[in-house]
Amino acid sequence: MTDLDPAKLPRHLAIIMDGNGRWAQQQGFARTKGHERGADTIRSVTTECARLHLEQLTLYAFSHENWKRPRTEIAFLMRLLRKFLVRERPTMMDNDVRLTAIGRLDDLPDDARAELDRSIEMTSGNGGLNLCLALSYGGRAEIVDACKRLAREVAAGTLDPEALDEDAVSARLYQPGRDPDLLVRTAGERRISNFLLWQISYAEIYVTEACWPEFSVEELHAALRDYAGRTRKYGGLVDPRPEAVR
Ligand code: FPP
View 1 (cartoon, rainbow, N blue to C red):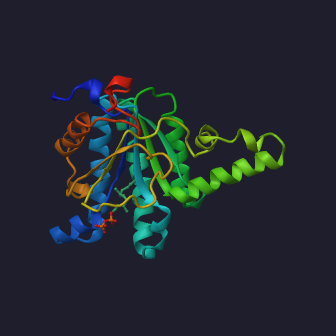
View 2 (cartoon, rainbow, N blue to C red):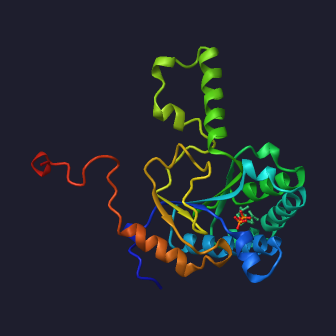
View 3 (spheres, rainbow, N blue to C red):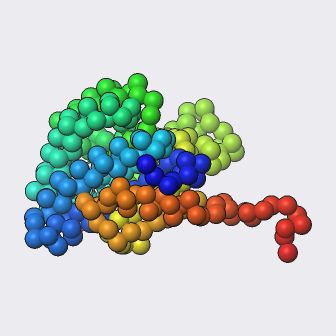
C-alpha cells in the first residue's frame, strides 16, 4: 500500500494538468499524443484518489482561454473528451466515482455536452470521490457569473445587499462546496492561470516539473506527502493561545 497518513490527506485536491504538448514534443510525437496520454493519466490519478478516499478531485481539463488554440487542436480535444467520457464510465462505476463539471458548459459542442450529461447522470448515485472536470472554465468568468446571480437576486428583491458576505458569493459559484486543500500544477510553471481564483485563497500549492502525461501515482504520492508536512494557518497562528504570542 502506501506510507500516507489518511488523517493528513487533502480532502479536496485540484490539479492544473499542464505539459501535454511539451511531453509529446520531447518524445518526438505530435501534441495530440500528449493529450491522449494525458487522458490516461486522468484515469490512473482518479482511481488512486478514489482508493485513498479523497472527497474531491477537480481537474482543469479545458480553460476558457483554450478556445484560442488552433481549430484542429480544439476539435481533437473535444473528440478526446467525448471518447474519454464514454470509455471511463465502467472505471468510474467500479470505483464509486461521481462525475461533475464546472465552467460555461453551454460552450461545449453538443455531442460532448450530451456525453458529459450522460456520465453525470449515470454516476450521480455514486458516493465516493467527486471527480469534477473544469470545462470551458475561467476563474474570473465564474466570479462574474456569481455576481450576475447576486445582482439578479438583489434586483428581484430576494436578496438584501447588506446581507452580502463571502458565504453568499461562495454559494453562487458553479459548484459550492469545500475549497481545495491542495493545488498541484504539473510541468513546472508557477502560475494559477485563472483556475479557481476564489476557492484557492488558502490552498497549499505544489508544483512539479513532471509533465501531466508522466505524472505517475508515485508523483501523486510525493505531492500528498509534501502536503502532509505543511502547517495550515489560514492567516492565523498555529497555536492561538495568548501565551504563545510573543
Ligand atoms: C495542457 O497541455 C493540458 C490541457 C490543454 C488540458 C488538459 C487536457 C488533457 C489532460 C487531455 C485530456 C482531457 C480530457 C478531459 C479528455 P498543453 O497542451 O497546454 O501543454 P504545453 O503547455 O506543454 O503545450
